[in-house]
Figure (cartoon, rainbow, N blue to C red):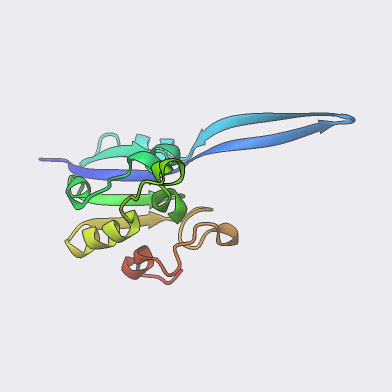
Amino acid sequence: MAKYKILLAGESRIGLASHINGFDEFTTAAYLTGADPFLKAMADSDFDITFMPSHVAQREFPHSQEALSAYDAVILSDIGSNTLLLHPDTSALCRPMPNRLRLLKDYVAAGGGLLMFGGYCSFQGFRGTARYHNTPIEDVLPVEC
């Protein structure tokens, strides 16, 4: 049986911690991913999952319907709308880029699957940081953000 191709975007972050010991202070940083248990559970399934951490998705998330159509479904998990809207080349090089939220909406309208897992940067997000309200993604979700 052919495997279903799934794109999982998000589920990663860089954690920054400040430590204060009396008068002394230092900062530590760590790369964290929440995708590992899910990817492990799906390893022997009918799903071929491509994991695209948030910092990679900012640049590499598909820029066209053709690229999106390579996947049977897209999972957004703990990845804010700005990560998909604000491509690094737009801010650094003033290069216009496609609205990837609109591309996802069109992808769903053409029959592609979309799933959003909850997290600090899903739906509207913690303190409103995900910002999917009034976006093309909200139009195709079964909930209002």
